[in-house]
Structures are given as structure tokens and as C-alpha cells.
Image (tube, rainbow over the protein chains, first blue to last red):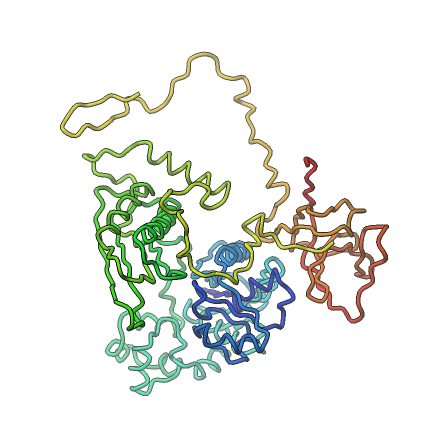
Length: 417
Length: 136
């Protein structure tokens, strides 16, 4: 029988902050989204204070101050590096690892013996090597592994590991699990099912396939099969080629001049170009959009976007910047306060697939290689496009960000001697 | 080398892909090895190795000075004689681990380090290397 595990970091972003600031142990900790908008990670202590996921920060600011909550801007350089470390640890336990999100990975544990014990070993090694506490859910399918993880998280008696390859345990818990907690069951399906009297995972599993087919999509049918222990979803240990590459941000303060907008968009497309090149793909089209605050009725509203097909697919930042600048010229109007903008590169494909009739500058690849390796060696934005660096006053707020402890020599954690 | 084909849309075609070298092959060719990779020496396990900055003078007797960069491995089990990152009541510090899991300074000129009563101590990681810059 196959066995999958879903391992994830508990309050992952908060836990990353605690690794390098151990005095935060037992203190409530929250991490805010880009631009310090709302909470995206809460420690157990913060949850106990009643702080909800996605609470706007301005609404809970007082509560945080009164309760000595440690508040952080998100530090994705740190979280990304800690995530990479955790996945390296998983590879000590199995060659097949699927990175599902920044804090969740599926592991193929087929063939391992004494799974609960193996799960504990994974947990303790991750904690020792990275300091991040985790929960491990194990099951004969990915869907059941994800459910087991949920159970391990909510029930402390499991000590962080719940194994649903154990049939008795599975039978005991499936009637207690709400269908909305099942991976792959969206809000709409959950509503439809509960109207038909199907409320728990056990009920859904025991609904005849024919009936399922009438109510749900093929995806839903697959989910039900997985609940029954029939494996339908494989581990994707090789990341699929991305279909598009987006860089969008809310600004720290509204942008009111064209030059600043060009600066911001140049910045975004530079980052997107780097992403393309690290994935070895080229983009065939660019979307650019920008809009003002849709909630503020007191200022004029503008929401515009444009898509342009490139003459030839490219990942060359200089070419991308030219397009984006031209598109910004078309979209821009004075007199608006833009609060968000973004670029999306689409029609991604292999970089060499160029039109024979269009001459590609052979220096482009070498220039981009040089650019990327200089920036990798000497730090981000050592070399950048001039129009990306005028003032950067629009940059998202991140006043409460911790140092890049693991990726920047200037941010190393400090120990007193 | 490239030849140009003149047409309405000129494109460049390479004639030969590789360089042809004249002369004698280097006698070292058969003995070529990779240059020494310091990173492999200092960081044999990337996932559990972290760098820390030293601040203070209490460890100079074991050759750790203010401003040094320590290589810290979290996978090593701490033993007496190890230099460790110790978290004492939440404060990050560098200490020498002694028998009986006692912690100590390494600076004869300083008064003895005594743990505060009921101090909470965890060992964050074990120091494996110290990077001390000699060039001022």
C-alpha cells in the first residue's frame, strides 16, 4: 500500500521569526502581509487573543499593543530560505518530495515501516536542524494525508503525527471531519453537499459514486475516491513549468506621477525577468495593469490594463522594460492616485523557440547571464535598470521586517560573547 | 566565425561551432582537479548550518573575538568542550560548554560567569568554525 505524508510548519512565518529571536517563545507573534495590511500568520498565543487570520492590522493595533504582541512585516527572504532547509531535511527521509507551498510538502513514504515513529523522526530532525515545529499527517492517499495533518494539528494528544494508514484511527475520525476541511472541496461544493445532508468526511466517502457524479465535478469524484483510499493524485516531485509569471504589489503610498509608475513597473518586470531566466523560459506576451483604491469613493477611480504580444518570446529584461514603459505611456493619465499595479508575463515557453525571421541579438543571453550572476554574487539589485531606481518611495511598507538572518551577511543573528 | 547571408531579413549562421586549437595540449590536462571549495569545508550540511555574528569579548581565550563570524551546525549534539550558541532566558549568547552541561566564559580577565538562578537554558547550535578576519 502506498503511503504519503503531508508535513507542514506550525504557524510557519511566526516560527521562522522565533528561531532567530528565541525571546519570543511563548510571546504572541503575528506576521503581516505585504504592505503591513493584515495578519497572515499567528502564533498559538496570538490566536488565543482572538486575532483572526486576515485581520486588518489597523483594527488590531491596540489589542497588539496592550498584549505585548510581537508584530512583524513579512520577510520572504527568510521564510523562503527556511522552507528550502526543511525540504532538504525531508530528502533525508525519502527521495520523493513535492513542495506544495512555502510551508507544506508531500513526501512519498511508501515502503517505510512503523509510520508513526518515522513521522516523529521527521519532526524531530526538522526541529533540530531548523528550529521549526511541524505536524505530520500520513495516509494512503494525498487527500487522506492532508486530512491527517489537520487532525494532528487540532488534537495535541497525537504529538504532531497522525497516521491514517491505521484503519481504526481513520474510522474513528472521518465522521468527525467536516467536508469543508477536505482538500479539494471548495466552498460551493461544500454548500451543495450539506444541502443534500452530506456533512462529514465519512458521509461523503460512503455516498455512492453514481450520486457523486451527479453532484460534483470530475475533481470531486477524484477526491471521494482518494477518501476511500484509492490513490488518484500522484506526487509531483518535479515542479510543473509555470504558465505565467506575475509580479504585482500594492504601493506603500499612492503613485501620482508617470515617472514613479514607470519606476515601479520596471522594478516588477525586472524581478519577473529574473524568474523567467531561472526557470529557463521566455514570455510571449505581457499584461500591465494599474488601478486606484476601489474602496475610496472620494477620489476618482481608474482601473486599466493592457495586453501586448511580443514580437518574439524573450526573457531579456531590457526588452521587457521597453515594452512595459511603452504600455505605461498608453495607460497613464494624470490626476489619479494609483494604489496598485502589476505585470504578468504569459505564453511562457522554451527560450529558443524564436521566429527565424526575427534576428535575436546574440549578446542578449550573455548580458542577462552576466546581470544575474553579478546580482547573485554581490546582492540583489547590484546592477539594475536605471529607470527602476529613481526614488522607490512607492515601495511597500515593511517597517517591522526582521533582518535577513540567513541570506545577508549584514543581517546575521548576533550572539553576545 | 559567422557568415552573413544577404536577404530581406538577414540572419547569421555559425559555420563552425567549436574552436580549433593549434599547438600542444597542456600536460596538466589529465591532472585537472576542481579548485578547493571552502564552502564544502565550512558547510558540509547546508540545511542545518547557520552563520552568527559575535559581539563582545568574553570568549577570547578560545580565539573568538568581537565581530567574528561563527559557523554554527544545529545537527551536532552538544558535548562538553563545545563552543555553543546558548539561549539564556531568551538572550542569545556564546558560551563554552563544560562537564555537567555547565556554561562558562572563556576570558580569564573577566569575573566568573554564573548562571542566574532558575535560568532557562537551551542550546541553539554548536559552533564548528570561527571566521576571524586578520586583514584590518
